[in-house]
Length: 82
Image 1 (cartoon, helix red, strand yellow):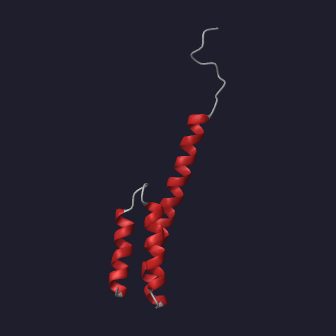
Image 2 (tube, rainbow, N blue to C red; image 1 turned 30 degrees about the vertical axis):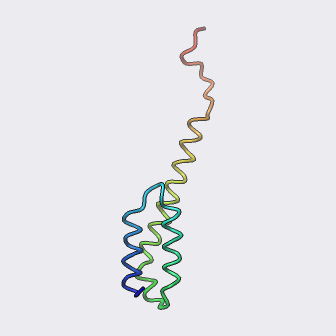
Image 3 (cartoon, rainbow, N blue to C red; image 1 turned 90 degrees about the vertical axis):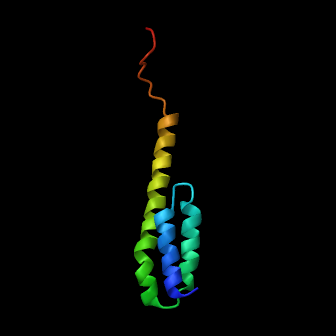
């Protein structure tokens, strides 16, 4: 792949990633990034790499938060007859 093709693929991964595919897409993007030999080329895709990483982090935190809410015991007694 040419550097331009690699940049285009990383950009496509960034634009098309979903919660379900972000781990796979980030792994693929890292592999592609390693194929870029020029530091200047790597800098050109850094924003997409950062974006993929940020999405993964946000989705992981959201999933953990949702899981805690589902398993939390409130103990407020609402809805119970006294």
